Length: 226
Image 1: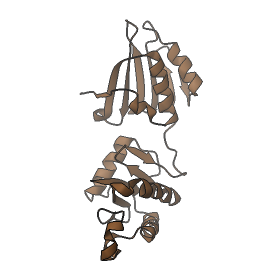
Image 2 (image 1 turned 135 degrees about the horizontal axis):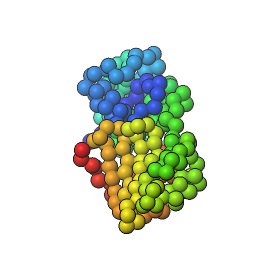
Image 3 (image 1 turned 90 degrees about the vertical axis):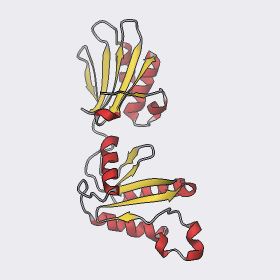
Image 4 (image 1 turned 180 degrees about the vertical axis):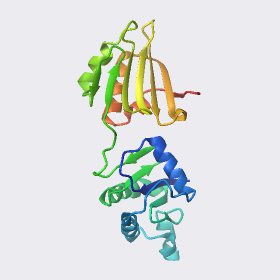
């Protein structure tokens, strides 16, 4: 088993679903979703200067290589398979080098997309609720305050939105129990958990807003079927 990473050029932020789709297509030699750029060759040259291709490693040193297979390279991307024992070391270098070359680095194991400074990591957040409250880029305190105002009658839901297909939402039932959901692209990336407490809803919304991904481990998420 290997630890896989993909590197390519993107001018805008991607949902994890979109990044996963691009990575899958690149692994199938479909390059249509990404653009050619000299930065990829620069990245590849610098990467293999530090960690040479398997074919360039002397026979006696092959076991010391971090690669489990030859790199998949085009003028638009580099996909790599790293042996698990070297994954932490090599992945950290790949992320830093990709950012230096103004490329994104996608880790399909998590999944998560790492961006260079030129790309905003996420579209601007919008928080709104049933009663018409609507705010951009809410701070943690504002998120907590809004969730505390939710009631079963007249203001029962709140949505924290990155795009129309990437968001977290919570709804309060008549018996005072919350359900929480998130969507990260297409309908196959829509998950739900219930029941949950108001305090956990606050913590999850704040985590989602700060992009620290702690919210992913707060609940036993169940994928919804549509």
